[in-house]
Image (cartoon, rainbow, N blue to C red; front, side, top):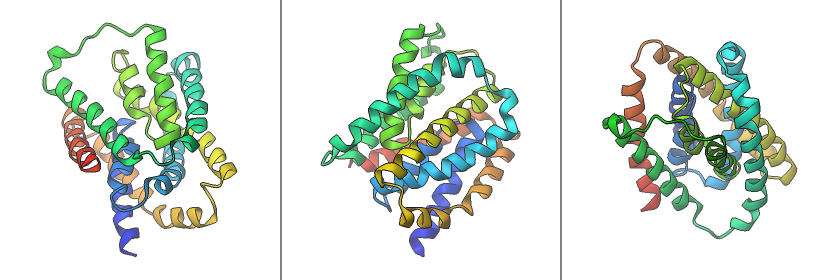
Length: 243
């Protein structure tokens, strides 16, 4: 029961972060949750929770999503990466996945934090379609392995002139779509079995609490200040996964 309470708190924080900004939910859930629960078992649980959360956000805010960007650019490259990641996962047995994830999070969150603190370092020239596609392909690979392709996807879209609401709705549509595919794949390969679904059910009550917190913050708190707090937390937690 203590584990359930801890993971419910993690899910609330992760859902609040993603409902607020459109990303950082998986990074928060996996990096924090990995301290208490095996990462290979946590990923399928989070994918189901994330799918349910993003289904709500997409249904409520679908009008803000950039559907042209989704179908012409993001989803084709990410789906290709997702298939490669699903193929790669069985071959990664024995690798220190927790430390690898920690390194990925520290690099991404640290670099984004530097750009927030020193905005003059952030170039504004948009990526070419090929360059953005490469980052989105890598996002799909990481989404399949860690359920957290956010770092690469956010970076690929960082120079797009997207409004705050459009950015959030577009990202949440991506996570909802890809996690639906992952759920089917995890059921097929046995990673999402009946015990995993029963464990997931214990965490579902945290979803509405996290969503309500994120919606409340979205209209009242500065995105820059909230992102700084999340990124600082991710750097610290990612470092603890490495060491």
